[in-house]
Length: 396
Image (cartoon, rainbow, N blue to C red; front, side):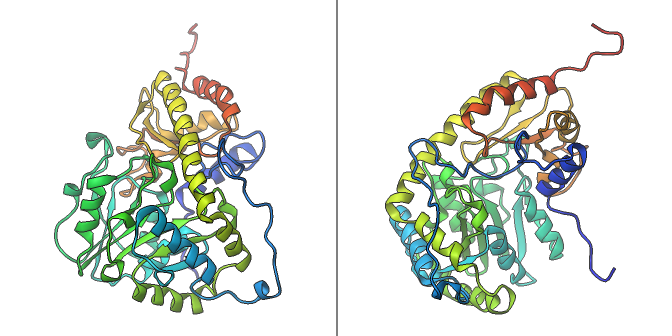
C-alpha cells in the first residue's frame, strides 16, 4: 500500500458494524436508525413544503463559480442579516459540498503554531480531521462532573488558540446561548485568536441562535461560522454547506476551490437557494424547532423511565445519556442489532479516545432526528427489551 490508512469516522464505524451484524444498511426500511444524524426529509407539522424539482438550463450545466453561485451567496448573507442583524455580505460567504468539507478546509489552512481547542465531548469527525492533519488539540472539560456544560471560563487563556465548536453541541444537544455565547465570541475574536462555530443544528434550539449575532464586523476577525442545508433545511442529500467569514478568508477558500474542489453542483445550489427564500425559511425555523422539541421531550421521558441518566441540552435532535448498570454503548449495540436498531456509542464522541473503559464508555447518543412520530411506541418497546436486566442462568 502506498496510501496512509485510517478508519472511517465514528458514525460510519457504527453503520459498518451494523451492516456486518444484520446484513442491511441502517436507514433502510425496517431498521431503526438511532445512530444516524439526519432529519426527516418530509415536511414537519406547520412547516413549508420541500421543492420537488429545480429547472436546469444550459447555463446551469456549466462549471460553477469557485466560491459559490452569486444567488446562493446572496441568499445566505440575506438570511443572517434578517434573523441575526449580522453585518455580512455575499463576499463573506463561500459555498462547499456540505459542512464537513468546509470544516476540513478551515483546519487544513490553519497556521502551524496555532493551537486547536475543542471540547472533550464533541462531533466525531473533529477527531478524525485533527488526527489526519497531525494536530493534537487542547481539550475543554465536558464531562459528567460539569454535566457536559463547559463555560467560557473553562477555555484556555493566551493567544494563538483556535476553537472548534458545534453549537448546539453534537452529541449532547447543549446550546451555548446569550451572554455565554457572546463571551465565547469575544474571547476568540482577537487578532491572534480564532474560532469555528459549526451551526449545523441551529434551527433545533428554541429559539435558534447564531454566533453571528455577536460578531459585529466579521472582516476584523478570524471567526468562521459554518452552516448547511443538511439539518434544519432538511436536505442532507444535496450536499450544500457554507462558511461565513472575513473577505480575505473567503478569497482563500475561492483559491482552494479553484484547484481542490472545482466548485459545487450548480443544481444543488439552485435547490438550496429556493430553501433559503426568506419567508419560507422563517416558517421552517419555527416548525422545525417546535416539532423536534416535542420529539425531544417525549423520548426524554421514555429514556429516563427506562433508567438512563440524561444530560441532554435543549438543542439538536439527540439524547445524550448514561446507560444503566454499567452497560457500555458497544454492549448495548450488540443487543440492539438483533432488533435492527443501533445507537452511537459515547466513546466515539470522546476527543481523547479513551475507549469503552473511559468516562464516555457508558454514554450513548440516541438520535430521534429521522424518526416519524408514529414510530415512538415501537422504538420504546425495543429500547425497553434491550435494557432489561438479563436473567442469570437457571433464574426466573
